[in-house]
Length: 392
Image 1 (spheres, rainbow, N blue to C red):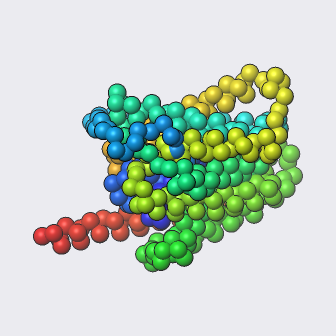
Image 2 (spheres, rainbow, N blue to C red):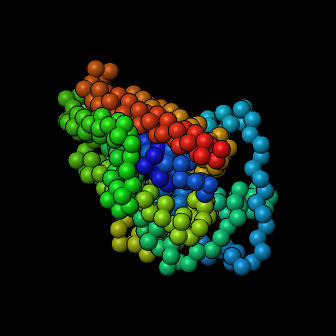
Image 3 (tube, helix red, strand yellow):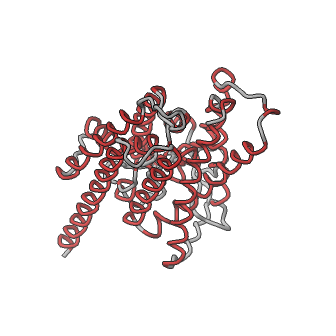
């Protein structure tokens, strides 16, 4: 989406992507360096996911730029069947990571070990990118960035992952995902304040119902429920969600400037960020995280943690195919499909009736963000047409 200039991520892979939300917000957002439009069209959810990915791009294990680097192998040709397959994989992995992480955070013994969990995801992201950067796969050519250059982005990336995950731990999945829609207007506001970047009037108008819808969901979803079986969002969940939106938006805006400053693609940036973020958190974890009795953690929880890392890898790989080979329209559509799927499944899991008042807020928020996407896609098409006429 137009203002979502570089992503989740989300979803980062930690929950996105947290990850995961329109998502999520992770942002993700991202995987290509060919132009700003691909990144602008990312859904908030993808921004989370991309953001997460960007975080994980930092390692001193990269070849120096002065060294001869093998040219990356061209991505395999994409048929309609393979494109649909990768879209399905990305959608299922994103949905899977959100609900898997929610289940993990529902365990009181793991809810307050957020930094450890984020560090694990950063390591998984780096390992995935390291593998797919090898000549056999050739998704991208690693490049080196100094720790001094990448450290601010790595800090922002860590906050972009940890705060949304805390929101997920203290919120319903529906609220968590719908709240990530605020990534788009927040990034737009930051771009205007910092860089005087403006949006088309119709795009701004479409963001009004998106924000209003999120407000309605925030209010009704946090009200105490008479039925104890109905899941609600706590005040902490709302606070962490808002802080996460700010962190994810700042990270998204920074990513755009780092692409220009370091002349790196999103995968190259993320490959530099991930190890720095993971290593940096190791110094903070002993003072912040509350560890469970590891021997008392049931086997199914360990299995979920492993599944979360696996989903993160699938998101990172499939995102490359979707953005690089199917284009921004497909990427935007996939982002909205993921948002709607997660919201619908989260609603069913919450135990709320169909007539619950917050369902109106969900519909208004999603309708607004879809309208925004349509407006921005039309604007891009007009720009492309004008460029063609000027060349003639």
